[in-house]
Image (tube, rainbow, N blue to C red; front, side, top):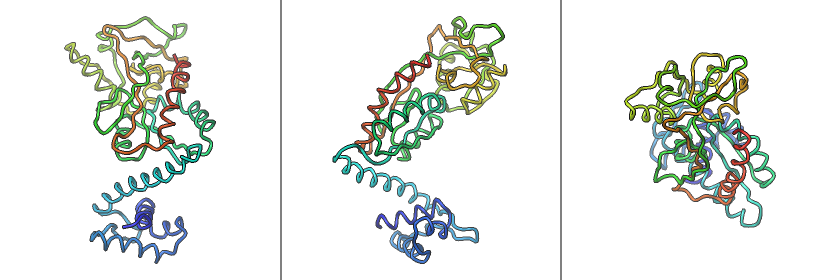
Length: 302
């Protein structure tokens, strides 16, 4: 197996077509088919199901695709890391943000990154914390910002900041944007709109209330921070979130926040990288840049 064969296989798998993959790779379709066939012979496995609409992966093909993406990314990292020794970091870094944090942080971080590393490329994706975990472990992303991450031997985790958890509710006319603190016991009685399990915030709230002998009153399960905040702004219920969720909303005039007390509730935002793959110079420098940019950006949201 060589990198060229692997590259051909990955393009066919992702595009679902030998014809389209040949066009993208700028090779003849017979030559592309031979590369994939050699790979199948070497592995003694059929990698694709052929049909009239294109191709789909067999179980063996799915396993190889997962490994292939990681190998391809590691090769690119190794090449760029060696090239980086000559000066400004090169290559590509992929970062995963939680939804609310992404909207508040993306613009200032991109500006800082492009100014600091003009020869490098940056890819940003957003997702739920549980998905960011999976993408980081699989090598799909290089760095993830995670809310309240669970310790893992596969990850290096650095806490960056801690934010109070707030109760968000509909803001009536002439009502203050910030209300008085509210005990967690009272929060449990309100109609809450929350992310689905196993979202880290949902699990934290349920666990804390269970320790008090209580259960939250959840009226809607919604796996979108933006949608949750929108529903709250229209009076459909209450939500528990950090200040980032308010800062990212277009409906701030219709939201009131109240700090949760007795006990105080907070969420830790941490930066995570793989402990099982060496970090390129660019990834290391990007991690350092987070520590410079995040406090400044977050401060505007407080």
